[in-house]
Length: 375
Image (cartoon, rainbow, N blue to C red; front, side, top):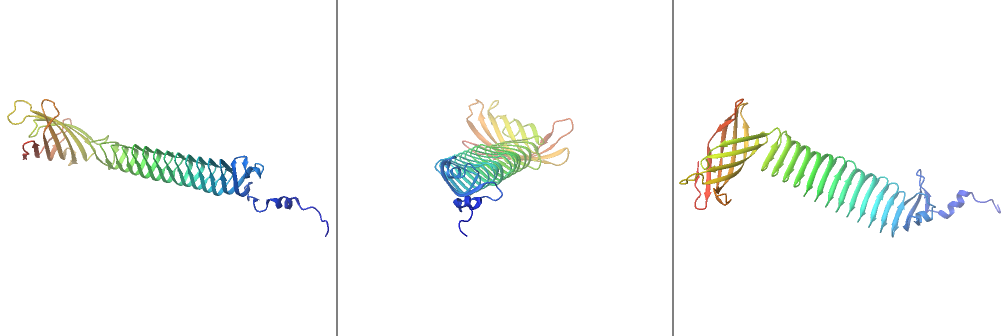
């Protein structure tokens, strides 16, 4: 058949595109395997498609690249911007931005941003932000931010912030923050904070609401504590089945007692006992007279740990060990002796009266010249 009619418009337009450009099924986007350029408007996605959204499998840019979807790898000296979702890898010296969901890896010197749900890895020298997180690992020198719950790990030199739950690990030099529940481990040099903790908090300062697990640091603060608090200062509003071990342990439903007593090296002592229902720390201030001295010859400061054992509503048994440092009466803070005493007190508490207690003590005092021990 000679001459024939003109080719259908669809076949004619498709002849120039070939395999390089096809319509992405059901997306309204064009699909181009490869994109190269300098900036949006000066890249093959825009020059060959008149501004239509284009999906890519491979993109390389000397500046900033922009595509709709990425199903593959995008590399840029400046930034990679995906206006839809990313399944694959984004590499940039500046930043990687995904306005949809991200499943894969974002690596940048500056920062990474995922506006949709992020699953995979975000690693940056600066900042990682995931507005909605799934199973995600965030690694940064600066900071990591998750706008919702996260399952995985946040590791940063600066800090980690999660607006929902964390099931996994938060590790930072500065701080870790979980707005809701943390189940796993928080490790920081500065501060750990969680509204609810199920696991361990290790830092100089640990703060938790409802804590079931362990807090180890200089200062530990909990709303309701069930587990171990190990630090210099332990504070809890309600100590459920917890064990605070430290210099000062305070629980609103624990014990706070003031005592006055005498022993074999001090004729007067005043002590404060603070702690949980069963464990306490005692701080002792005393004064005494050595053999042959007229009037007070020394004063002392003591610190000890003990156990409180309720026997009945009125009777109790306290077992403790206390180390006292003796100083000369001239207030020079020059230690003259150290005395360690241990023993038990059997006490009673009658309604409307102060509790009273008595019991045997074993004492060992070491001076510069001798170390007599007596019971």
